[in-house]
Image (tube, rainbow, N blue to C red; front, side):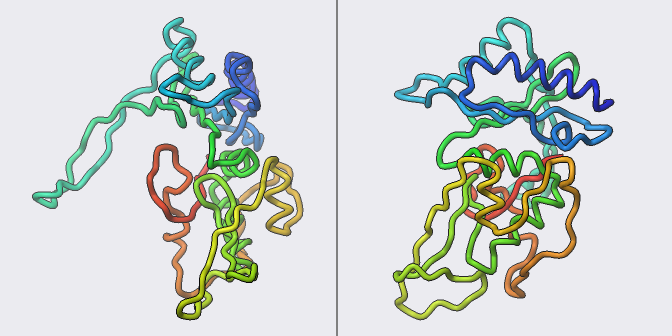
Length: 244
């Protein structure tokens, strides 16, 4: 779709969720001002969290919008999975995600991804990664490796020893040495760039990067591009989502 139309529709979805969000921003290709974004992406933070089975504010609002017919559930999709018994691949029809962390819905016929930032994820990291693009996210993830900084479940963690010294990715740890994961605060997007010690880049300038600062020979790029930041994932690996 044309950027102007995408911007208009994304703003309308943002307005629908505004009252239920403590923070909310348009992300993805629309935020980067991509000439032809193929979908809409919204990142929001609830005004209150889920407690004793009660829905958080965004979740409650999403259910309300569906019941009112203002948004529609996303289309089902086919996923290829391997049968554990036969080892053969087969196609399985799956429902579009609709949970407290991630919603795939439709608005006026266009696909909309709504990402909800809740702990342990932090707003700065969540908005940065959901803005993308995928190539920029790959490059961004690698910038912290030299100082032992990793993206994990929507926040930044630095590996340090018991004396507070950082441990670079790929470095050998002495037997018996204690290591810790130190959470680095990133309440805003600029904090992510500051922590990684790289200059701020406007979203529209975040294109594919090809020269990472540091790539350990013991770790493949595939390991980095795992599902750690994907909604609903239980993976414990480090990684970056690929906003498009």
